[in-house]
Image (cartoon, rainbow, N blue to C red; front, side, top):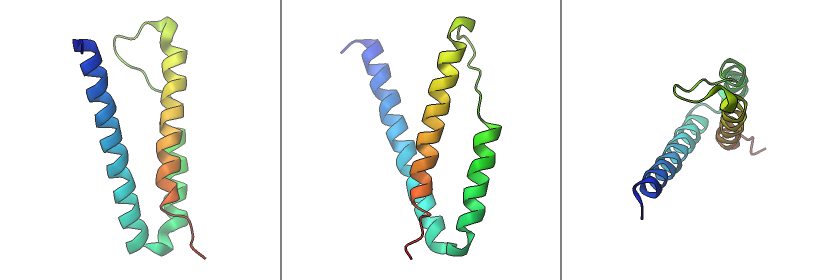
Length: 90
């Protein structure tokens, strides 16, 4: 495995770990504050709007649209997974 492949693997493992942490935190929150589900969904929407763009240092301007799109897709994916913890069981 090359150094670059190892770096990518480490990043992927870190992402999986962070997603698992977000899911566990949201599940715990949903269990302890079941009446707060709508407020939390609203906060996720505010978060989406506030963090809809990203600028990464060292990324060439010609890639900024690509990076922004990938960031938005990743953010939506993580927040959708987190929102699954707050689905009403009734």
